[in-house]
Length: 228
Image (cartoon, rainbow, N blue to C red; front, side, top):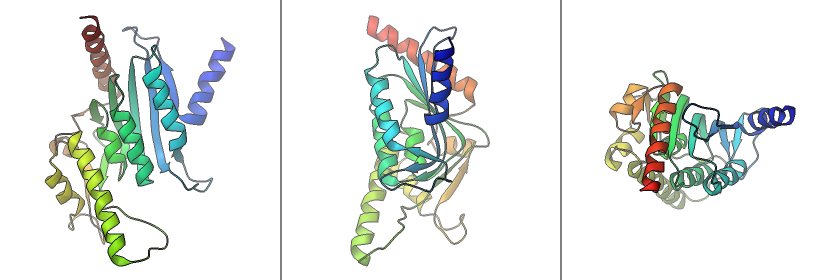
């Protein structure tokens, strides 16, 4: 018992993940968190709260391949981060064959937007925020036209992924991304709680209770489908 408790604490402490199995539905759910900044190929300062994609990808593979895991609960409170890495995580979440639900707590900004819509069903708390804005790059940039072309290609990849996995149209998402009237000295749009639902980016406003109820119902339907 002590060993199991220590293992559970280490999972939470090191990776922000936890297996949940002692519930009334007798379903085994894996809870995964995307917190802080998504760290990609470059290491961020030790003082920065990060989620490392090299930790998340193997865990998602394990969730898919583990016959004992029935579903995935994805908790999000992220400012964004490495675009390629965030999109890779979102693609992997969307390809998992088991039922999945996301819950936006605090915020799911920038590349966090594709992550929020990558599950089968999505929730956002009333005070939760989503920020959609153009792709940015830090560091030395050589050549204006090649840089513009790269940004445009990356933005198109993000817009296509998001529009494919939620009810919002690609044209509307681009309008929100290029909005000049909301963010001072910048482009983009901030959506709070119900506004994200109104824009059809998120399915429903709700908290952890609603997220669990929905995930259990998806798992039960999935099990019945396999039996028939």
